[in-house]
Image (cartoon, rainbow, N blue to C red):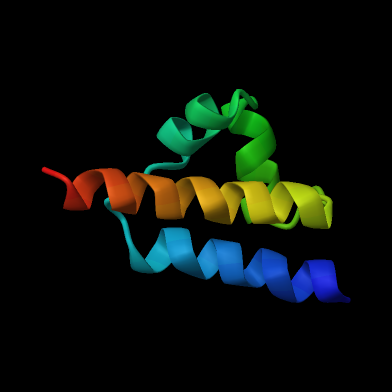
Length: 68
């Protein structure tokens, strides 16, 4: 159940911030874009570690942007 609520949170992040592209996040994490898409559409369940890695990468992008 925790994974499902976290998954929904990931989907909400990408939906509410269209400037965050799943393709770019997948590339930066070295995972396939179709796999990340499957996570975001509830077709596959990522591990808690993978969920945290995705969220951390999004935060990292935000930190990089603040340095511009």
